[in-house]
Image (cartoon, rainbow, N blue to C red; front, side, top):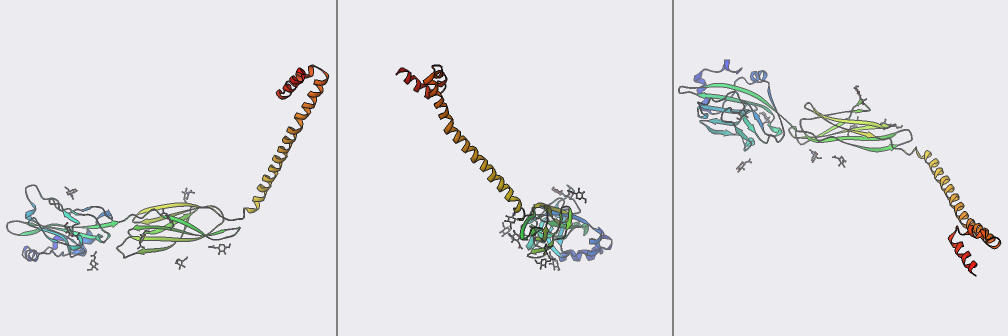
Length: 312
Ligand SMILES: *[C@@H]1O[C@H](CO)[C@@H](O)[C@H](O)[C@H]1NC(C)=O
Ligand SMILES: *[C@@H]1O[C@H](CO)[C@@H](O)[C@H](O)[C@H]1NC(C)=O
Ligand SMILES: *[C@@H]1O[C@H](CO)[C@@H](O)[C@H](O)[C@H]1NC(C)=O
Ligand SMILES: *[C@@H]1O[C@H](CO)[C@@H](O)[C@H](O)[C@H]1NC(C)=O
Ligand SMILES: *[C@@H]1O[C@H](CO)[C@@H](O)[C@H](O)[C@H]1NC(C)=O
Ligand SMILES: *[C@@H]1O[C@H](CO)[C@@H](O)[C@H](O)[C@H]1NC(C)=O
Ligand SMILES: *[C@@H]1O[C@H](CO)[C@@H](O)[C@H](O)[C@H]1NC(C)=O
Ligand SMILES: *[C@@H]1O[C@H](CO)[C@@H](O)[C@H](O)[C@H]1NC(C)=O
């Protein structure tokens, strides 16, 4: 719309229309004023709105519609109700709504990022004129994977454990940042990125060297385009300085096993001597008094013996 005031007179315009491809006049001015942004995720279907809707009394035949990107490349163009031009890179991925001229792109690619212009011309009986034009900026993003934190112990001593902590995430766009905290205090990661090109998904890895003197909680956040994905990990101080505390527990085990052995010995000794004492006692009673026999019947074995002896 911003371009209309400096649009050329109808005569010159008609010459351009014959040319087929519409060259936009005031590109930079248009960009500066139009700030429509459409966001989409890689692989999804996205619709870029145009600036006109055909009234039900009319048909597409009365219009010329140009969808162009990167200032001069025509993505899709329609004239007399037919597709008159299409871009190789957008082949089979575009569709235009025949009533409101919305440009549908599916699946959307990272390379599709950028400004798009929709230009609508109306063909009346006399001449053609630009009805409207619109610039929409497409912003394609891709989600990063949940960060993966790994920690490798490089060296350790009694006082500290030196660790190499790395945090990685992949397959996202645009280029991300990594931030993080160590027990709620922010830390700076040594970051490296990998990407096939500046229009390809990124893999990111952050590295951190730490001296862990006590258990700490570490958080890693991958930030891109206002989104953030984070993961936390508890780093345990691993060292062998707890070893001096191990012997006491060893002593406890030996002490308790000695007690158990003594206890078992006592039981076996008791088991060996106690019945004999009873038996000798009952033999004595059996010999002397009849009442002693009744006492002996408490133990079945000895009662059997006494009954035998009594019958004899
Ligand atoms: C255009 O039409 C399509 C389908 O009828 C609809 O989904 C879309 O929201 C419309 N866009 C505008 C800008 O009106
Ligand atoms: C846009 O045009 C510039 C210059 O003509 C070119 O370098 C760039 O690759 C183009 N971008 C896309 C996405 O086609
Ligand atoms: C587009 O679709 C047609 C028909 O399905 C197919 O022959 C052609 O190879 C496709 N082009 C691309 C670039 O995928
Ligand atoms: C995290 O990274 C380690 C080492 O590279 C790998 O073995 C593990 O499968 C990864 N975990 C996830 C959830 O990607
Ligand atoms: C971390 O610090 C922030 C502010 O510095 C505070 O609001 C938050 O409660 C803290 N979290 C923990 C777990 O200490
Ligand atoms: C960051 O990592 C690179 C490569 O792994 C290394 O050369 C560089 O010294 C590191 N920087 C810091 C500050 O640790
Ligand atoms: C990014 O990481 C993914 C998964 O780990 C891997 O398949 C891909 O090759 C990596 N991309 C680059 C450019 O290194
Ligand atoms: C960790 O501590 C050891 C000795 O206590 C020291 O030699 C080393 O440089 C420290 N490393 C870092 C990353 O602070």
